[in-house]
Image (cartoon, rainbow, N blue to C red; front, side, top):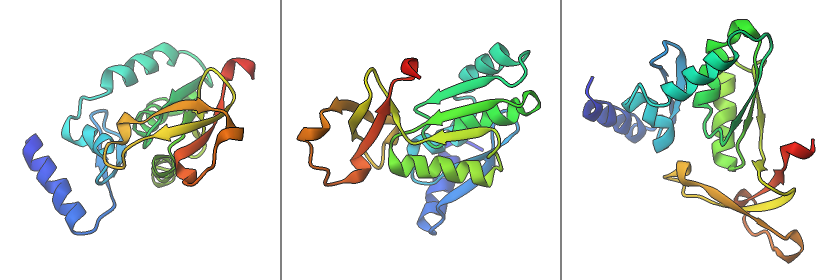
Length: 173
C-alpha cells in the first residue's frame, strides 16, 4: 500500500470516529496507532522509521538477562512497545518517561492493549538537570515537537495542569 493510500486510510478511520488502530510494525509485532497523532501514525506511513534505533538498542542488550532500558520522551510508546516485544525472552524492564498528559495516556493504552504491563513501566515525569516542576509546551496536533523548561514553583499559578509536570534528575537517585 502506498504512503498516500495509507494516509487516506487513516484519515477515513479518523473521520468515521475511530480513535486508534492496531497494525503490524516492520519487525512483525503489533503496534497501536493513536489516530490523529502524526508521531503515532508515522510508523504506519513509513514502516522503517525508528528501526535503526530499536535494533541498535536491542543489539546492545540482547545478551543481557533482565536489562533495564530508559525510553526518555516515550510519546505514545512505539519504541518501548517494539523493544519489549523484541526482548521479551530477556525479561527486559523498560521505563518510559513521558510528561505530556494526553500522550502519557496514549502510552498507557498502548501498554494495556498490547499486554506489555510486566515489561514497560510508564513514568509521567520530565527528565531534566534539576528536580522541581517544568512548564510543557506542545501542540495537540504535533506532540513530537513538545519541549519543557524548568520553573520556580513559587512563582507559578497553574491554570492548566496538563501543561505542567514534575521533573526528576536520574543521577541523584
